[in-house]
Length: 366
Picture 1: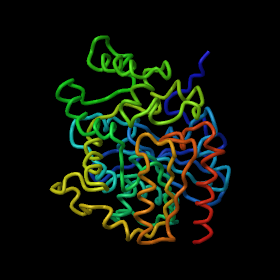
Picture 2: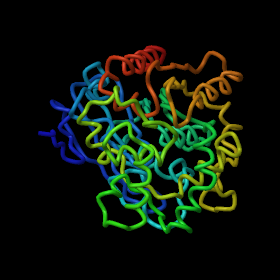
Picture 3: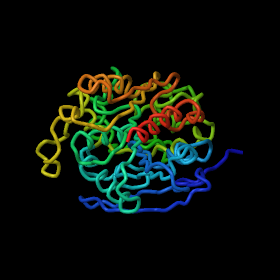
């Protein structure tokens, strides 16, 4: 019988005092933080998810997760964010403009203000994944956040790069999906919808090209992100329960954020999506230009089998190190891809110790 884990479960962090902290952004969205505390120790640490996922990436009960690992190793005040990109909220699939500028300008400053309202003014460590990592790097470059003791960026930061096929999908896909197929939202669960609809038919078609497993949601996720069989992780790095519930962890996605990433890929680095948008007037048009002023030490994590953003973090580390050669660090992760450094069944053995060592050294250097 397949183990069933409820969505949004906190069962993976036993023995912690847990509290929920909703907050409102300046542009009027209700978001949330979940706090996990034990005895007094180092921290706080803020965990940031990517597009279509949520704080559940960091609290998975089927294996030792990042939150539990940090609590067990002395970082006893851990905060998991659910931003406007979270699959716990409807915002990502609603019509309207969506950009990573919104997170850099509104989400992260509000989240840190709420965190500090309870945890005090201590400097914060931040660990972020995917577009959450890219957006947080943008907020550092733009100066919308401060008091960040260290930043761990998984998979991508300010220099997103794609290989040829994912780049072609990103170049033409949003318009084809939206205007030809009538699909403004991509959903890993499309196969379970009504038969002979556009989403159902697309899922069936995608599965014809993905014979590596029998999970249609896994196939759709590979279609949505990158290029590979599968694209986001290696099957051997996942617990079977994780693979079975991958659609719980990675939900539906609108196309707005993809258009912003496309603009960045064309530019070769992080740029503002719409320089005419008055809501983002305080943000730089070119984030990488201001990134040389970042005084927060950054650890760039780069799986050597990343089929989504490839060597983006290797490039970003090189670019920033040209200006501050001794400030930032790069860790290339053998056998890992885009998402499995966070949700892999053995990440507590293969990846988390590298993160922990970086955080501890930043604490000692303070």
